[in-house]
Length: 525
Ligand SMILES: Nc1ncnc2c1ncn2[C@@H]1O[C@H](COP(=O)(O)OP(=O)(O)OP(=O)(O)O)[C@@H](O)[C@H]1O
Ligand SMILES: [Mg+2]
Image (tube, rainbow, N blue to C red):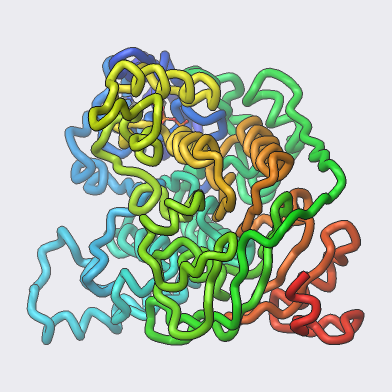
């Protein structure tokens, strides 16, 4: 094996041979070989839980493999920590970022480096970092604080950290899952410029269409093993890749039953709210959603969609206007009170708002039902019922984990999303607020979530669906609202929606076919 790693031929940035990584109850990597050539973008694909993040965590020095060996630029390496990997020229941007929210971009880039800690000295680095960002097409203000940044911008900070450290291999774990299409295009330009400079990139993604676009080669994993190694992406199709990932055809056709709207469940009236950066995020938003209806919100990230979900779920105060659920005024009521009115929420932020990473899967699953039978018995919690309930959900929603007693933070990205969906959907909501519900899910799981959301609609829930995937919005929704700069600039019946007109509205254009986009008569069905 050792000669294999030092094999002559074109130099490899990374060679991994026979990697085995076991966790209690699961073999996450079962003898995996992986090659990364210098100057290529290599996509790593596979279903949720296939072992992609684990393999890259081994490469990034986070995990030590139980067996196998790794070489970087022809040298055997044995990393004991991410610090070792960084020293060898590797940088890894995780599914969940590791930035310090209260510090600036510059401070975060300099973290862990031997640099002065005084503000006065830091100012000098601002220019240097702004310059580096500009050279690689990363639009960023070095003085902005992390909490003020969008997810896309935070990701740029992570990339910048490694560029600053001179990383030659960049590992990106589902970077586009959190990006709007435009942001993804910007990222691809940055990656191309890095690769042209001789860097090498591992790119994990569930978006098969973009894989053929950005990657030179593709490796596919299934259940801890490689099922296709380094095939050129030029000849692949999304269907072919899906087949390699799942081992069967996964073509999705969304079938909706006719629209039978009931009474109004959610009513938002002339709502205004301020965003994290202190500027108006919602500027007079009004909409109604009826029982049995899915209202999809289309828009480019950062135009008020997240804030809309937050004011409905009690996570952000409104400065004007009102929100009612089934006629009850919930304007500026705390989340607990909103939840009590049977409002379910699949939030954008899965680890902060959506789950408690340090609690078990079972505890996370019962979070919203612990006060109801069969879990609550008078004043006590029936632990047997908790386990049965959790195991039932784990099976129904196909959450891959050795048991319901392990901490939620040990779940793969897609399986954590399944956990949140399982909990929220089974809470039998009157209103479902679903923000990017299929982000990070594999093709098979996306189809399952779509079926579940449609089943909710069938059973009479009202659904506010916020998604950056326009196909998803159009496929699932009864009506589509387009948001731009904190306003709803148009509402359409999904069946007769004109994609081109929606695209235009999303980017601030006007749709000539609409007499008066966003007039109150249209907004309120
Ligand atoms: N630290 C850990 N402890 C226990 N089990 C783990 C740990 N990390 C990962 N696993 C398990 O190993 C398997 C592979 O997980 P991994 O995160 O590598 O999957 P993935 O391919 O990245 O999936 P996704 O697309 O959902 O992100 C899963 O069953 C997961 O639950
Ligand atoms: Mg992963």
